[in-house]
Figure 1: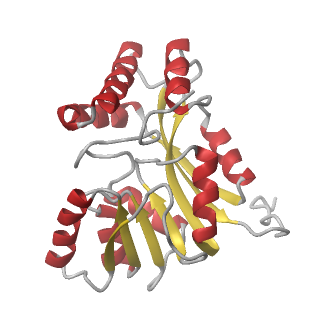
Figure 2: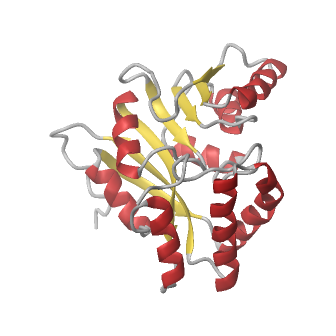
Length: 252
C-alpha cells in the first residue's frame, strides 16, 4: 500500500506536534545524556524549533535545526537571532528523507511529531549519522489499550502501509535496527484529546490529502471515546556490532 506523503505524520504550519513540549525535550536530553557541546540534529524543526532552543539554552548543545520548508525556516532563523543563539543553533534546509550529513556527526537525532520515512528506512538512514553511543528519539503511531477496533487498525495500515505496533514492538524494531532500546512513552487520552483539538484549526492550511487523513484519524478517535491508537516517543542508543548486552539492572 502506498502511504500518504510526506510519510506518514504531518502537522501543518505551526500546529503543536506530539512530544514537542519543553518537558518532553528535557526528558529526552536526560535519557540521551546530553552534555555541554553535544551535537544534536532536530529534524523537522518547524517554525519554532522549540527543542533546538531548549537544548541550546539549557544543556549547552550545538544544534542543527533542519526542515525542508524554507518558509518555515525563515521564522526559525528570526527566532534564533532574537534569542542570541546564532553560535549555538544552525538553521538548515535539508531533504528530510536524505539528510546530507557526515557519518557519526551527531550525539543525538530528535524527530518530535513528524516521521518522513517508513520505520525501518528511518532507523537505517539516521543510525549512520550518530556517533558511538548516540541516541535517536522519534515519534511513531502505536496501538494502546486492551482492544483496538478493526476500523482503527485498518485506517493505520492504509496510512502506514504496515500494521500498527504496540509500544513494546516499537522497541523491538529499534533493537533489530542496531539500537539498544532505552525508553518509550505514549500520549494519554487527555493529551491526545488536547492535541487533536489544537490541530483542527490548522487543517484548512494543510494539503488536501493530508487534511483528509487527519480528519479521519480524529473522527476515529472520537468515535471510540478513548485512545485505542496513539503516538509514542521511543529512544534508542546506537549499539555497535559485537557489543555486549547491557548489564542487568536487577541485581537481586
